[in-house]
Amino acid sequence: MFGRKKKKEAQAKAGAPGKQSQLAVVKDAYRLVKKDSPLAVFWCLLVFVLILTFGVIIGYNLDHPIYAGFLSLPLAFLAAFFLFTRYANTAAFSSIEGQIGAGASVLMSMRRGFLTTPAVNVNRNQDMVHRVSGKAGIILVGEGGFGVKSLILDEKRKMERFLSGVPVTEVIVGDGEGQVSIRKLQKHLKKLPKKLSTVQLREVRARVKSVGGLNIPMPKGPMPTNIRMPRR
Image (cartoon, rainbow, N blue to C red; front, top):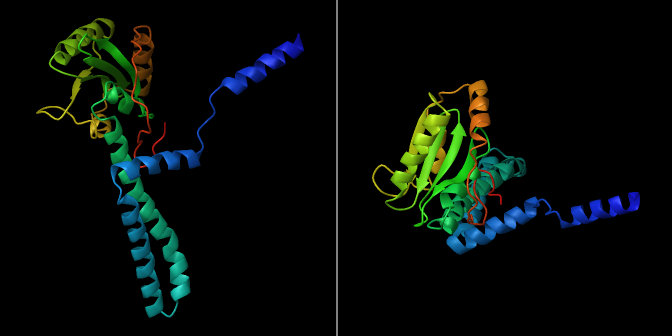
């Protein structure tokens, strides 16, 4: 009996997807950057060399070129890595831009303070609304065509029934007037004024947990979180 149990546990562990290593994350980011901006690596190397050279020159004038070179080495690496992450962020957004559920993919990569339920309302034209809960209240994010406004209105009415008094913010993803581009979506949500306390937020999430959502295919690929390396 115990042998069968151990065998099942071993099979479950073997079938479970392993956590992606940092090296694999860097490789994925490099492939995205190379495809989106072929000269990105050249500019990163150029920044690295310039900062390192500048540090050595300063050290040479102070009669300590080797010591200054060692000090400027980590600074040069950090500057080049920061530039690379900027390219990686741009490439990651470009890889999913225009795909169905791209907004949900960006929202679900937000970890601290935000909880996203994707596709809580969808129509036949594949317009959809995602529900985000945070200290700003309930944020309804719509993406799609002309029908997305009516979907947001329907979901807003539902939230007003379930969560009377909780602030509801409407956001539409796009490049039109009054819309938020997918590249600026995370920053836009983080800048919204905080209206709920931690205790109130827990109560709100507990009440909307039973509402649920729909299952839709999400764009695959690394997504940025702040300036860190994109993760799957």
